[in-house]
Image 1 (tube, rainbow, N blue to C red):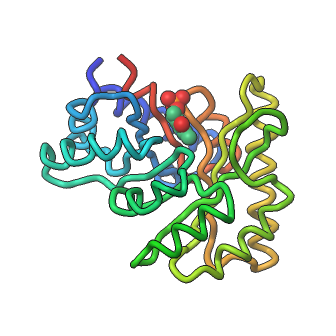
Image 2: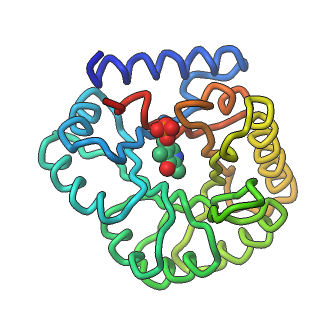
Length: 226
Ligand SMILES: *Cc1c(COP(=O)(O)O)cnc(C)c1O
């Protein structure tokens, strides 16, 4: 299957998962994650209608984005989905429309200071206690949201998570459900400026994520793997 056919298959499968959960198919936005994929394949996906593209590294994106944009009629929106080092914040602002991986107060502070426009961001929440993964502990999300919403240029538009490494489907479902419930509590307490998006679900677990209320899925391999 070529990229356009795979994109179509992924969209069908998103719609089916939404339907199973009694949700509208357009309640779930697809971000195609193109890390590791050559620019020509990304351009094919964009030409086939992919409007949101994710990259996880600033350096790779800096090379790829201009090539993709010169090859397509309508440029996509670019999402950073990987850890951002503070010394790359300025470069990231020049490349990405949305930063989905704000994983510390420090990085939010640096982004806010460097930004000259309202910048939509997601707070990355980390459910994997051990290991060196980045992100806010679930218990600290409300506090982080309050602090970051007060920074001049940042607009927290959602929460993002990656399921813990090696989790089985039940464990993955529990994590996604926990993030959704936390989002709901934030909403009930009116701590957020708007209704927060839930960015959760990748190639191996997006159907579970959609059943648990995901509004953004970040899918790489199912679209772009060789
Ligand atoms: C790579 C990546 C994805 C996409 O993962 P696939 O398993 O290829 O679908 C999504 N989110 C983040 C943060 C990633 O690094």
